[in-house]
Length: 282
Length: 221
Image (cartoon, rainbow over all chains, first blue to last red; front, side, top):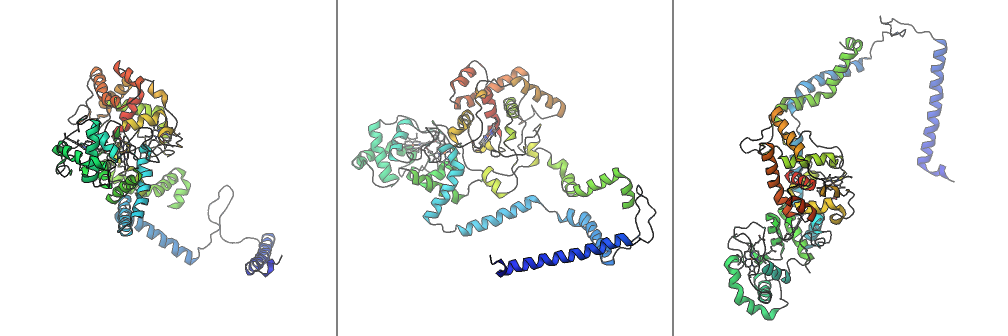
């Protein structure tokens, strides 16, 4: 082994040797002193169980820094700390403000991929306990994200009705149309109102359009919900609709979904999780 | 002075305490009376919620769950607004806890719902894969102890002047009135649940422990 070629090892060994030599000398000196010398000097009056104490003058530098520390402590205890008012909440507010600034600059113009990633993160923390890690709704315990937002889900909504988002118009009644007409309306809503692409039943769009007035009574001719009386279904299945669900919560036939208005999610996080949910739709 | 302290161990201990506790003394004491008052909107627990709280304590939920959100961004992101001391004004005892094997529950009422709690308490793994929280199936068969809860509410009303029966505060009334109100409060919860056992018991006028603890969890906001 050539470990002596290594500078660090060499220095280490030299240092060790130096320490050993110095230790031997110093210890030797003190042992000699203990053996030969008698202590002299003036004793302090006290006697602690037979142990006495010499009057040794304190080194000047030590005394000065000791007194300095005491003066500082008195200032700090009586004036600096109580009046300087450290506040934990203040520190929290600063932390949040700093984080928000950083967050906003970092995500000022997020691309699709970044948003999806953020959305997945939010989903796994906030939504997965109810909707399942894959968004499948865990055997009907919450909305199944792969089915929600599809044309089929619109058919379901028309047949079964919808409730619990707390819109001024209240609940959407069940059974307004039979399944066949519902399929046609769903095709129309999917293709023309939500503009979500080509419907699977494109041939039914015209039939659906003829039936649309049933729906327009509540959702408006353009499906935008008549300025907040009912949900804007021109967004149905899109991230914006998910944001709407998050803002309202929903107490439907499956169960209760809490609203997310207590500040845990920022607007951009809501949109991001909406995009992620959107990506789960099959 | 120090010499004198050295000879008087008791005062020495007092001096050491003051020096060590100084920061706490100057930050906590001056505002103590003020911050210990209930925060606006904080209300005493209803009898049903108290019965749930007793189940919570009895089953040692506080061994794994804290109820104290510290002012750190990482915590407020996950659990919501940090806790204020006045929010615990009606907690006897408070259930801050000291260990988070599971998440904090201070504001769980904001983001979990009755049907979720039912699934989760019956079988945590069915909703959170890999959860190490135990099942609490016995809560679906044990009755909630409304009587003890009423006794506690009545006592703290008399002894500590907890503002039951005041304007905008929960009503307590007589025991008969309180049981009626507990049933009325339990009704919407039972309706949101699926368990036939719980529903059948409720039809007989019996409230199961699970209903009470869900009422309590939903009240944590």
